[in-house]
Length: 112
Length: 111
Image 1: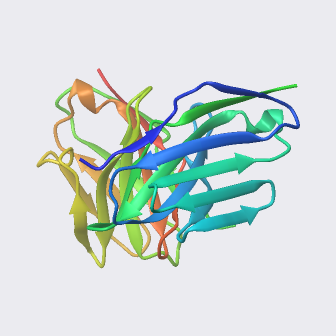
Image 2 (image 1 turned 120 degrees about the vertical axis):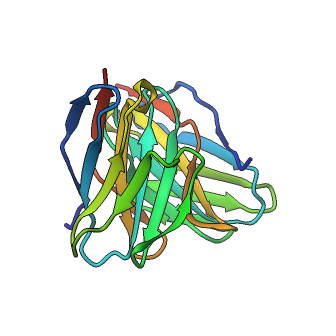
């Protein structure tokens, strides 16, 4: 069973701080990694994708991938109250080319 | 900006009834998916569809489920005989290659 694990939180950070979200995956042949943001009652919104080891930055967001450790993370700099949401890690690849396997999600609360 | 749309936003049905959930994927995308999320649980993959056929399905996607692309724009999920445990949010997604974009979802309530 291919698993994606996240700390469910909640993770609480003050406004302006860096929020760090972590994810591990069990399928070593996974190839594509995604972070989605999901507000309560809404659909997942793609915020970052990463395919190779290292860091990828987009605005206030940085995704980090370490395939040897089967670990992917998301850093949110200068966190804002509007960043308060559930962050979903999703993985695909290997024998399941298009199928996204999601983690449980980490609830992030940014307090003013 | 192009987006995936879904109708209806909320569907209430009685156990044993058939429902059809509709999706319009992003126009130049070739890969289509259905996922569901039971309240408080993970988003779960149901099925992927490419080139007018199912490319992969999960164990959830049993004989009660079917998908169809009846024309050049719509992508549908049919549940033939709904069960109480089918109550969930159903999300359609589409992708050009790797990145999947989700529609707003249909909340299905089976009573």
